[in-house]
Length: 373
Image 1 (tube, rainbow, N blue to C red):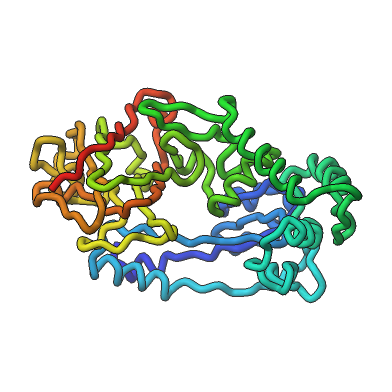
Image 2: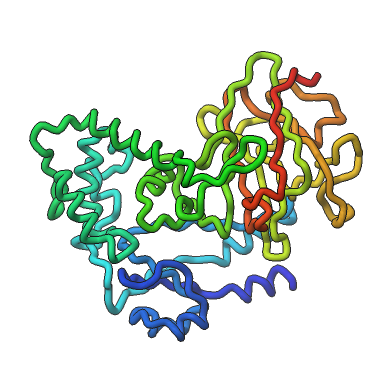
C-alpha cells in the first residue's frame, strides 16, 4: 500500500464519557454491541474511546522504522492528515465544571506548575476530584469518605485540626513506596530485573498507591498486555546509574527480546541525562532497539536486525553504555549507546510474549567495566 493510499484509509476515532461504562477503546463491532448509551449514536466512527472522567490526556505515537529522511517524510504526511475536531456531546454522564473550564484553571494561580506544597496539592485535589471520580464505580463512595476525613469535601479543602501536612506527606509517600515495592506486587526476573504485576501498571483499578507512583514518575503508562517496563533492581519507569571516571556499563543480551513483531511489537532501551532529556552525542543515538540495524552479535560482524539479516538466527549480543565524550573503538560503534556520567534508562518491551514474564527469557546481564578506548 502506498503512503497516500494509507492516508486515505485513516479513520475517525470518537469519544464517549460514561462514568459507569468500561473505560478503553471500542472498535466498530463493539460499539454496536455496547450497552453504553453514549455509544449508540456513534456507529459512524471506526472506534470510540470511553473516558469515565471529565479530564484526560492523549499521547499519539507514530512508529518510525528507520530514522531516515524518507521514513520521516511519510510520518509527516500522516501527521498532516490527522486532525482533532470538537464535537458537541448530546449528553454528558461525567460532570463538567462551569463554562467547561480547563484543567489548569482548577490549579492554584491557574498553573499546574504551581502545585509545589501539600497544601496546594490538596486545594487542587478538592476541585479536581469532583470531575475525576475513581475508575471503579463501586469505589466512589468509599474514596469520597476517605477524602472527607482528610478534609476534602464539596469542592473545598479544610485542613483537619492538629494535622502537620509536611509529616502527612512523608507518611503518604512512604506508604506509596512500601506498596509498590511489596514483593507481592512485583514479578522478579533474571539478572536482577523486575516488572510490576499487571494490576500495578497502566490499569490500576483500586491500587491507588501504584497509580500515584506512576503519576509521580511519568504519565501515560500502558497496561502490561501492551508493554512491559522492566526495571533493573527497581520497578517503575526508570533505572538510574552514576558512572565513576573510566567506568562504563556493558549489557549482554542472551538473545533477542521476544516481542510479537507480527503484531507491531518492538523493544527499546532509551537513555536520559540528569535533566531527563536525551543526551547529545556524536552519533545522534539515544536508544537501541530492534530498529538499530547496525547492532552485531557478540564476537561476530553479523547484524542482529535489519532487512538483510537471517530472521531465524538468535544469540547473545552486547550493548556498551559509555560516556558520549569517550567514543569506543570502531568495532564497538554499532553497539554503542552514548550516555552521561549520571543517567537513567527506560526499557520497553512492546507487545511482549509470555517469555518476558514467565522466566523463560534470560534478561540482560549488566556489568560495570573499565571504559573501552
